[in-house]
Image (tube, rainbow, N blue to C red; front, side, top):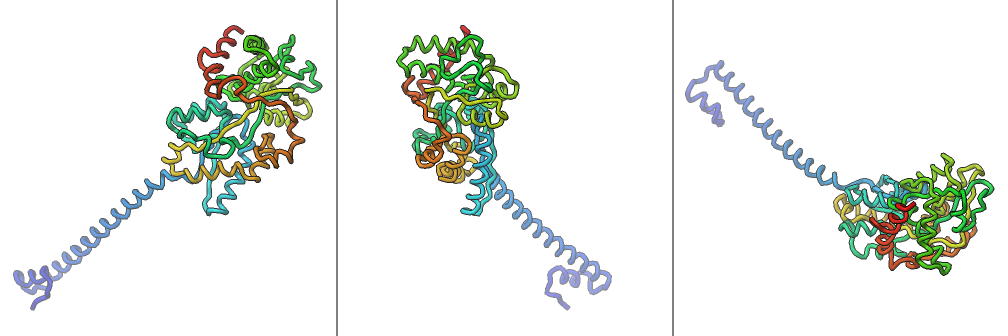
Length: 370
């Protein structure tokens, strides 16, 4: 009697047909087959697990969100814009994006990205702050030409905020150095607002026909009136509006409008006759977006800033939109003043950064002799 199975045939050939032995061999057979099946299952499961690990490791680098590293006073603006973009992008692509923000003095923010903060996009106060990333290989040459208006989706300027009734009658730059006037402005070494305040003061002299010696002397006197140099625009706003230090605050136009709106009538905006043209810049950070696989998302996010929808929001928060029709629509919100470019004072932003704000530059020399 054969079984056509090698294990059972072995039983018959050696031990005969003992029922007890037959039962024992049958148990061994079942266990053997079960073990083989379990081993096969284990191999398949391990293979699937390994495949899932590979997929997981691959997807881990593909972010479902963006990090926007921005300058200090843009918090409210981007809180609104981010919500709008997320809805629009989900409708167009079916993808849900979470956009996170980081805010601080523009120079410090640029430094943080260079030091490893993995920004997908930067929206910083100055060309030179964004260009610092290019110098470290994070973005390419020609980055400013990748978006309209040389990657500046809005403009702004530096204005004055004063106490109710303007008790020191501050109307123009020379009024800032009158006796007993105390000035609040951020640190030019860390803040875009701080840099623009200094350049505005310097340029107000040059624009009216003064020379460099006169400009230097005026700025030296101005910083003798500065009470404290905070790290960024929002901290300076808090020092002036909340802590009630100082008589005049030199700040972004949008920040001035926000301060006054929040003050319950205790503060007023003063527009000097002349100030600097500020052109904050934006860029996606190529090295980071390539690693995080967010390049398309980052590009779409920044391109959104140029849409009519975003430009209207930009105007709403006190920034001057670059869309001429929308700027004209909101002309009553933005008084016309003479705005000079940085090239009045230097060859370009890189030159201005080196001359005025590098170690042992104009600011260091002036402030040491305060």
